[in-house]
Image (cartoon, rainbow, N blue to C red):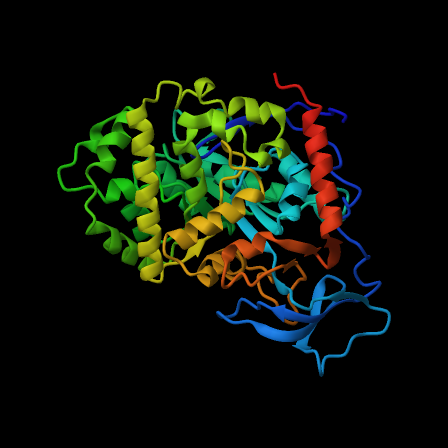
Length: 476
């Protein structure tokens, strides 16, 4: 493997790591296409279709793909197979939309292959850099194997920022200048963060509206989740930030404690359960989406057993330098954490699962996201863990899958996320009905990426190349 660049960056969120950027092609299938779209139609014959327009399966269907679009979906008996088509036998298999991970940190271009190999055909990157834009273009052009990428720009935070490399915004002039620059660069979203002042947050909302940019991100501590919901101009809240504070019992001392670990310990012991459904209803009424990212909280709460996590078979698909900084003894947030702190982290995850269930029960909008590239949240593979956690929180398999297909597509304003005529052909052929068992979404027989068929053998080959590349690296 050739190391072209060693750009160190901070990738932020709940659990963040520093990564080295490796610019190499991930696999012989890097173009992401078995047949050039538009040259030869692709047809799934006699397949069970999971259209994701409702909780249903269409049995014995033919699905015709031409170019990068779905041309037809209909009964096998009446849907013609075009002459010269590449025919895929779908008997006993299910065809579903490609998955959309709505919260990732794209630190290594090889991650693109790992996403696609897991049926993730679209991602939303939540801290963008110039390299992010370059990799996005390379994926679409077929120079690398990778998903379609939507991306926020840099993190906009208060002074001092939590993460080095963030952009401090305190005035309307600073907000306007930064958002104009991000829009010109090609970023899709503006990301707000936890230490923004009320003035800085309001300035970002105003500038974003003026320049036609969408705002997503954390709940600033100075504003609180109720302030964000009342503003109705931040479209998604990540990791349920702000909800634990808002759900505190009256008189709880948690908000006055500055030490993060101590604050968490106090807060998880002072939750007013009656406030949870109320917060969910207010979220629904505000029309704000929640990208709950349960898996990252679960993984962080398990860092007291990091040696066991290191044995996860999927760790081999992560750059060695990234794995090295997942060591909690090297992370300022965890190196002094006690067993009581980790117990509080696990209680925090349990609260987030209850909050997720309340959002579901109130019909608030939920997005599938993982915060991939944070400690032991492996790109692609973690999507299937997140789906299982959503189901464990009380969502049906259909509701969990919808958060990462049709609903995510609605949020992105993208023609993906459903299996129907006219949609872009991002699809997964799986062994098992995912509406009965959400784990079936991980049992892929192949992936259609922007109209190109990639069989399981090529996806496995791509993963093997990534693993070999990372095995040859030396962590510093």
